[in-house]
Image 1 (cartoon, helix red, strand yellow):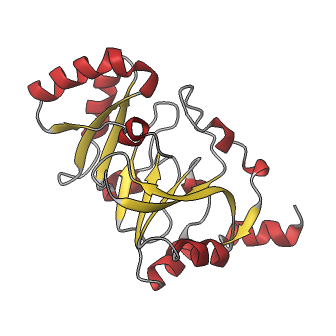
Image 2: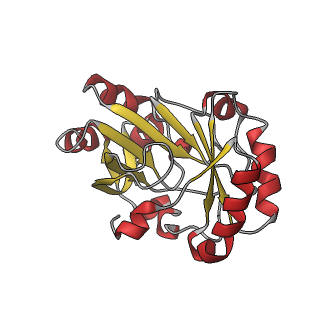
Length: 209
């Protein structure tokens, strides 16, 4: 990567684009909504159960002009989801400014491990034990999506719920490979503590991206 390209990436005017696709949001509050996904490369959080480990190494994903990403996105949908990887590794200001200028609703899915940049209509925070969120992301999260891999994760979920705002919607989502085992546990937990809601990866049941 040349110094000129590095400089553009640092400014958020180019971003390591892993993939982009039009599909149905499968998780959380907006599940069932048609949305255009922009998946950025780069993540150092390192969840062992991550289903897009190929996103971790940003160098595998070519820096792409942000204006080109936006031009492509607007052909498909007014709802845009920026995900990763961990998108907040990059400055999201230029991307969200340009998307908002096109009148789009702009959502982010993030572990919150980095400072929040950009202007968002919806912030889905999915915290990870290995690298906890920054306070700024807790403060603005619209939904908290905790991944339940084993019974210890219920305690972690409650610790995270104590850090978000009172209007943040609380979700528990089974880790896909443990769904059969953990769904009954989650159902029982949510019935006992109904401030929580169940989130399922409905896109996997629908067999779509």
